[in-house]
Image (cartoon, rainbow, N blue to C red; front, top):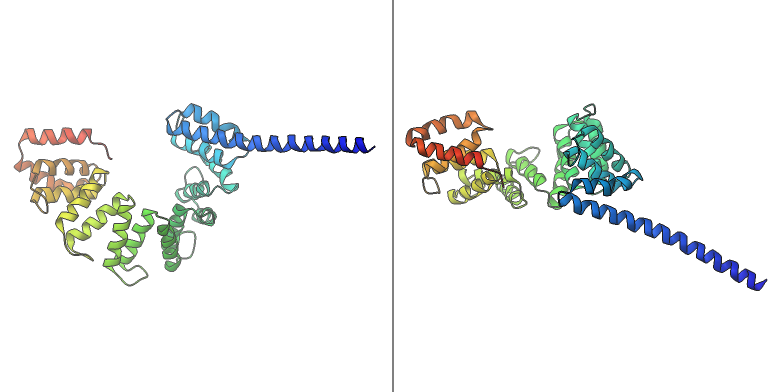
Length: 309
């Protein structure tokens, strides 16, 4: 009997070991499949990525579901399908995936494939904020700032922007810059606005590069510095920011803070004209009087080949 009890105990141990091994193997396999899918996605092999993500997504793995949403939203290797993307994001969000929750909120905020609902957007953004998502903090902050889906609360908006900015999110820093520049719920402070715009520019915000450049151009909140303004406008322009291109074009046309270069000015203003035709029309017409046809054509050809950095 003693031998039987010992044998039975060993059998139970073997069964327990097999069960634990299966669970651990399944978890490692799922993790490996997601990692494989991500690597394939980054390499542009979207078919392989989809095949790696799909089994885990179907079995309820939120990270894989999130990536399936990304694939269908962007049309990566499949026809673009916002409805299917939303369904995958929603599944991942229900299972606690913070960035998927943010994206579901954005769908409701825009009314994309679902009925537009600011209150639902707020709900989903708030869930993502609980998960520590910096982008959702900024999005929820804008809802409080504008009073969409919630009662307007400037202090709450500022708090959310500050938390997002503390996590390094440039767009939240830019929001804070605007709040202090215009005195929205706070005492107007152009110097503090400049600090936030500069931080947002450093974090990679093209629009913030234009904003801080504009302050240096005008000497608003900072000492006027045309060379520094031109540097910021040039960075914003290379990244496709139309207002940066307009200011840079105007400075090049006049020789403000940079050597005068009318052909280069025409190039940047031609690019900006696609988004801001009314703001560039007069400037371009003036430059056309000072440039040869060959110079104008050369600038236009360069503009056709331009791709934002």
